[in-house]
Structure formats: C-alpha cells, structure tokens
Length: 263
Image (cartoon, rainbow, N blue to C red; front, side, top):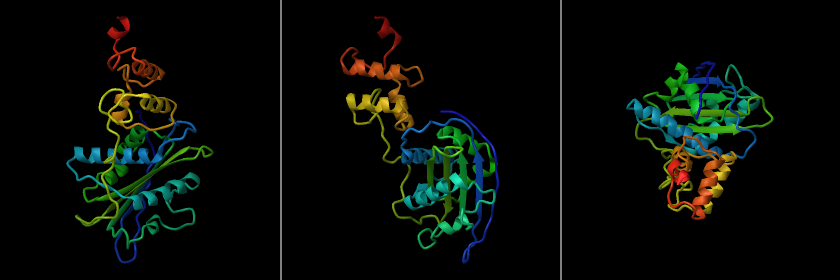
C-alpha cells in the first residue's frame, strides 16, 4: 500500500437540544486511481474502519464500533462530495451535515466528519488523515464510540474516489442497532494460497487471485500475504501462474522458493 496529503477546514455548529461540535475536515488526494474496475466498496470501508481502530489501539484508546446506520450517513456524504466539495461543508441543498443524523436513533453528544478524495488506496488515505492534525484528532478522540465509513467511485468525476467518515461520541456503554467491530467477519486465510479463507487451496482460490490481480476484488492484509505465492512482496500474474501449477500438482508446497524453481 502507498502514500499522499493536503487541505483542511473545520466547521462547528450547534444542534437544538444538545451542544454538538461538528468538525469537518476535507483532504484532497491525487493519483492512485484504480480505474473503473468493480471494487468491493463495503470491504474497503470496513478495512478503513479497522485501520482507525489499529491506530487507536496503539494509543491505548477504546476501539470504535462500526454501525450500518452511520455507514449510510457516510455514504450520503461521500455521494454529496462527488459533485459538491464545499469549503463550508454544507450539503448540496445547503443544509448542515449534522442534520443527516436522527438523534432518536443516534443520541450523540459530539460528531466529527472527515472527507478525502482522489485515491482508493486505504493506507494512502489513512496517511493523509494522519498527516493532518485536525483529521488525526478526530480519529483518535478519546471519547469517540461509534463510526460509519463509505467510499464511492465515480468514473466520470474529476477525482474518481470519495471517502467520508462519520465519528460520534455517545455515553460509554450505549449501544446502537447492529453495531460491530470492523472485520469481525473478515476472511482469514489458513496458509499461503488459501486466499478465500476456506482452509483449502483449489481453483476457487485461483479465480479469486486472478480477480484481485485485475482489480476486481479487494483483499485484506491477511489475504494479500496468502496471495504472495512467490514470497517476493508483490502480487503479480506470476503468483497466479505458480498457484495454478500447485493446484495441478507440479509443486507440493507453498510458497514457491527460488530453490524449488532451480531443482
């Protein structure tokens, strides 16, 4: 995975009946477009959510729950900024971002929204947010409890990729419908070659690996490691070729090493 940067603005507003600090920080990214391939956006959003919690864990902070309702809110915002990247962070119709959240569903005391555009690379977007003190403060807010994340691809737009993350603070112990820890249901390969995580190495893994190489699916870090059949740190068509030969019985173990090729 890769790297990038740029641009910050913050907005604060007050919501009726409760004081709400709304911080909105857009970041412009450039390059790293994956093209017009079909991508698993939900998986990518969940991977980003997991990255948030990884960074929080390093600082001894509680992880954030991912919530479908907040994912939907983030998705609305990600679609908003495709055509309306507003410096005052209002929605295309002029309403405030916090108006999207029904406080009867999410009774929050504080809300943050962070935005980014121009890349699908999770590490690149995360690094952009980490390199901005405002974004970083939102991600590692010690009182934050829940989040929603979305990424949108629009091939006809200028920046192609658009991210939105919504983070809220609620009273400790409060739960939201369907909240879960991101990647709780993630694919976890058993060993090298088992990219679909079913404990076997077969043609299904080969099909999935070829889709990944052609930017048709997204792999988490464990899948990327399992897909590195040649153990050279990169995933290429050579890995798919070696996996195919393993399935056909030409090799009896994975990963493939230089010694195996020589002998």
